[in-house]
Image (cartoon, rainbow over all chains, first blue to last red):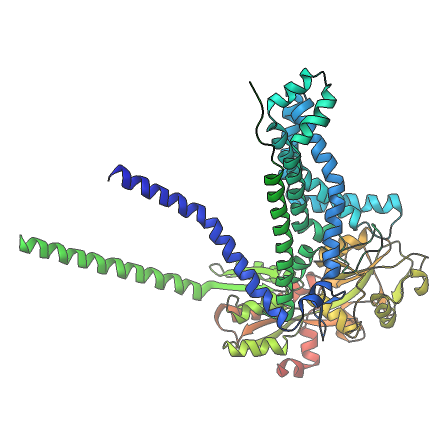
Length: 295
Length: 296
């Protein structure tokens, strides 16, 4: 076998591996749309997305997922309010401030947090956080927006922290040196030079963390309470979209309206995470710090 | 030279034949064992504990029989029966007309076997003062019209309505027998399994929910309905209003191991297991109303 032929074959093999995941994703998307689109023969897109009532098993059924969309967005936003400061600040600490020994420990613990199965966190929320919230604030239920946001924040922290940390590491050494040379303190260097320089990476981290939270199923199912209504307070129950799909798909009659409606909900969810990813990509390209001046 | 090539060709041909026949025998063998001892059961999570207990005992008595069991829900089970990926579908509701139509169009003829009676019981936190409710009160509570325990004789606390996911068989029975198909308030919380319902209610003194009596335990308090407590006796006599039969569906009249298993579930030993899991055996009912079983 000639070296040239070998080379071509190896290239081909790698191409097949690379395109396998592309192909799988394409097939999933095709399937998702094929199963979801038939719903819109009977229900308009507007009625589906902005409909206030989700009664898929009644006769006549109503397939309005607005309360589910609101539920998903609200727990995502609240979890970000918790996870962004925690994730970004821990990344700053780990990459800039912590001594080497502490750094190793903190870093590996954050990575361990990422490895916790979501069902374990969900169970924790159900048997520990829920009764605690209920007793402390004297609430009718502990399975609510706050509980779900806390657990989702715990899940998003490792994502936000590790990607932010990479971004902070990538800030060229010269920036720091220049800042110190001008007489800036450590705090000034971090706040005015390093973090702004890494901002595009940090934004990407935050958006990917949000995508993680919005798609999380088990936690939403176990601790959000599952009420398909627009919440009136932060202690009300909500039903995020993935939880609704997971809870109902098992018993929705095959190829019924309900079945298609759940797939259509999946399409909405897919489009939302897609948008998050596109924004993340755009932000990281657009605001990339390029070049550094050295002698 | 020529003969050598011929000889080689012959040997190759023989080898090929051998290989083909080996493969053929293997396939035949595999398919035979599948036909002989493999039964797939799928469906309702309510019927799951019955099927689990029955198959454990049955497989011990009949070694070599391989029964696989999975949950997923009544609809999922019937779906699997229709596409022939399951031999027995367990269900906590009767098969729907639409599903029968779909089954017939694919050449499947679902036959029902009533294996147990399930009584749904309203449950509350043990500290709740309320001991019983009427069907009408339950209906009003689930529609969100009664919002405070004070209105039904309890403390001045908000009622937190906990329900099952809208497509579970348990929800369907509750909606049918209690709500008379009126809509459950959208503020109702949703739990994806009966176990999770018990867990949620046991931790919340505002809550009310419902489970099959097989799931009752000391962490929650069962309420009487119209003054009648949910017991085997009251459910069988139809005095207790929220009771339903549980089914196993097969494709046509069962044969082989499938028939053996169904027969076992309906036998005295099988029905004892049903009682042990907290459900109500059907044998007494079968004696009282033989016509009901013939109907299907």
